[in-house]
Image 1 (cartoon, rainbow, N blue to C red):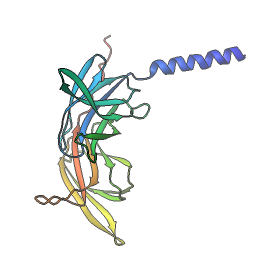
Image 2 (tube, rainbow, N blue to C red; image 1 turned 180 degrees about the horizontal axis):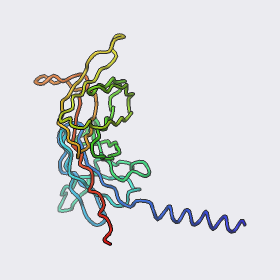
Image 3 (cartoon, rainbow, N blue to C red; image 1 turned 30 degrees about the vertical axis):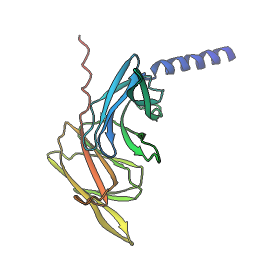
Image 4 (cartoon, helix red, strand yellow; image 1 turned 60 degrees about the vertical axis):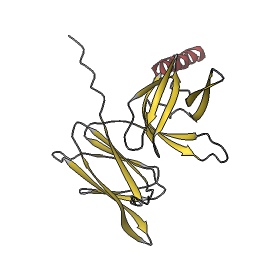
Length: 232
């Protein structure tokens, strides 16, 4: 009986291990400004990465999903190619096979180099839905048409796109001095065959373009094609 139990446990581990995904699909978004000349090693290949602030990158694929993602730049020193590591991002949580990578610059005092930190958000595109990520430090009240909810920092919330609706108006409020006040809003066209990702973060006022206290970024996320039915 004991030998049978060990055999079953071993078989379970083998099946589970075989079922583990071996590759990660991800896209990149810069938290501030454009990040260029980044690369990562994917097997034998060096893959170039471009991260922008207001548009998502193409989809990249990384094998060895359980290993950290090392982003680097290359430069030539005395006729030798040198790798300068810019960020080492731990792998996403177990089971995540498609993700959005947010890259932010870290201050590096008294140095001329650039250091980045990364954060993964699971990217689960489902047609006809909108996924809201509260990346701010505030509890936010969110209003979309006749739907309202309160979303804590770090929380994710998903809603369906109402049939026939072609544009989504999002209003976000925060509790200030004991009262809820509007701190951000955005209008975005929507389509039933698409998924929309909405990121809510602290605004960054600028001299030439003052922003809302909470900045809303919205991106289309096309779901992968459905698997083809087996031929009969």
